[in-house]
Length: 115
Length: 111
Image (cartoon, rainbow over all chains, first blue to last red; front, top):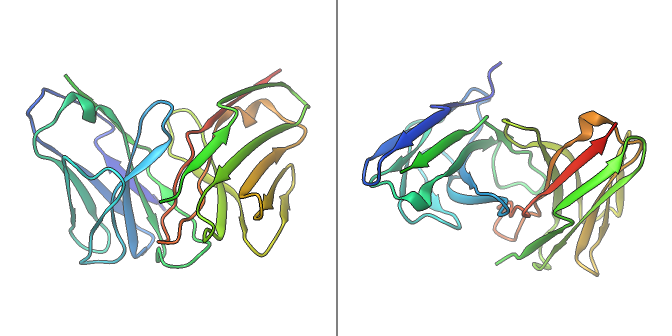
């Protein structure tokens, strides 16, 4: 049982390049999330998808787009990468996202550097 | 929105000693208070959580205590072991059902 799988694990981009981070979960979860983690700032929510077919902005959505391709997959796209987007990106999923005490399951992260 | 502060940012303890990490939050409607542990190169993992109708919860060597009046909750680790070395995050759930993560506490357990 793989849980949450993210690809790639590492990526280096030049300013202005685009790329898509892929995420897939095999737990039949309804809700999926993208976070970024910067030193000393914890994890900040970029976008989330409460259920298949819906997406909503989180705390820091600027410069990103997302697609909930199906129930399993949730991708994050950087259309024109900037150095400020250098970070570690985590995808997560949860069973429904609407209950009070719900556990998030995280992938192992993508380390992205924008030069 | 929810404002979350976590202290201390780093904590070094001798193996076998106890460690306490505190988290304060601002949203009085928050009613779910989890702690996540992140080991090097991995994503965070839930280690313990508590709901607002409970004051304390224990799971072997770890416990969480909640003071809703003062809007803070704490993680307690007793008899620390080297494998407890990691970064710990509090993440109270705000009124829109989203977790808001603290800035993290790096715990080092010295053998």
